[in-house]
Image (cartoon, rainbow over all chains, first blue to last red; front, top):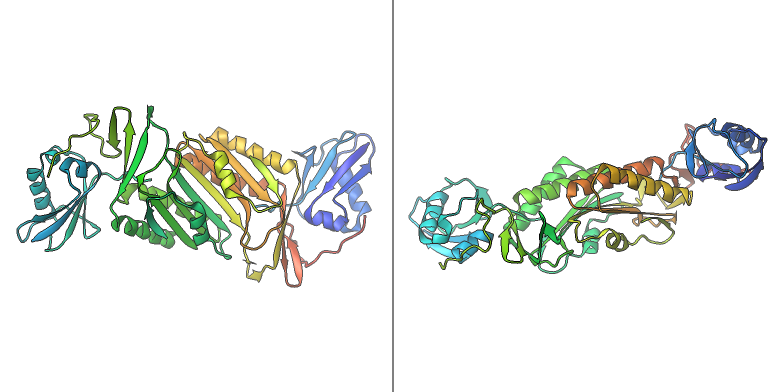
Amino acid sequence: MKIRVKLFAMLRERAGTGDAFQEIPEGSTVKDLWDKLRRDHAGLSGVEMKLLYAVNSEYVALDHRLADGDEVAFIPPVSGG
Amino acid sequence: MKIRVKLFAMLRERAGTGDAFQEIPEGSTVKDLWDKLRRDHAGLSGVEMKLLYAVNSEYVALDHRLADGDEVAFIPPVSGG
Amino acid sequence: MYRLTDKPIELNELLAFVGDPAAGAAATFIGTTRDNNEGRSILSLDYEAYPGMAEQEMARLGEEAEEKWQITRMAMVHRIGNVPIGEASVIIAVSAPHRDDAFKACRYAIDELKKRVPIWKKETYRGGEVWIGSQTGERFTTPPTIGS
Amino acid sequence: MYRLTDKPIELNELLAFVGDPAAGAAATFIGTTRDNNEGRSILSLDYEAYPGMAEQEMARLGEEAEEKWQITRMAMVHRIGNVPIGEASVIIAVSAPHRDDAFKACRYAIDELKKRVPIWKKETYRGGEVWIGSQTGERFTTPPTIGS
């Protein structure tokens, strides 16, 4: 499946990109995608902060199953205001 | 004693004046002044709303004793905002 | 800044007054004149104040707010005279390092203003007018005016 | 009106949007960038957002406020990109027939925005920068950037 990955703030800086496509196997979850990103980007492997996850702009749980064409956002602790 | 009397809003309209001088005897209280005003102005005699009283711009009780030159305000229920 | 004015209140002026590089939050309250009250259509609104004492009471409740919360600055301006429908009759602005203080102080200020600052509102309807706060059981329209 | 902008936020635009002859009260919150945080002098501030989702979450919490309180209209604009010290990073305006609803809905909106709208602030100090919210125990300055 082809997934669009959005990274923000510190995650974006650590990965060196905020917007990329990833190929992942059928049936993958948000967690599978995150594990893959951490393997691919050394800068993400040390991330320990609590993240939130959004698929197509809706918050989801880490075990949410992805579909082809999904946009997945990894959301570090927000600090707007 | 010469006292300056300030009346506002409905009291002012009922008395026909908002700013006047009154001569009252030495030792008079705010209540004495109010009783005199009610005798002088038919429009004030029927006033039943709860008033507040200020002498020289400070809220006082009805039995506050007046001094020559005081400015006494009769304050109907406020409705600013 | 505690002031009465017979001109439109300039919110930006209040905000400039309370603005401060150390204050991260500002809360404001804007009271506007409505076109109706309890189902009756309002034609016009007039405010009267006791000048001097009104500003003094506003400043006093500002000081009380400063004792209760950590605020940077407060501004409060009330309009008097005729206020066209939909325009601001009162604006309060409060700045503070943190929003909780700004909100609470702003709320306190408008609540206390309505309780004790000597200002009165008169609503004019078709066929009558009422000094708000002074209504009696008799449901008067225009009260008789007695010469002094 | 739920919006991101990279230009100065115009409070008057928000107030015009929420203004209504039936609404007697408007509460606003203005968050401004401060020149310091926990004793450190801030040189500059930058905000980043997840466009699309940020506006959607703002609109959602506006709808929640409408369910909880009787409000007339809400407007919420957050600035992104570099925000000079002392300028507004966020403004929320809420109109309502009565002030209690306006205050509560405005407070709810800023509290919830800070909890869940996907926007991030980066503070730059002399010698380092920090994404607020993402600080770790190690007290990093500029994090290493790894190429993709």
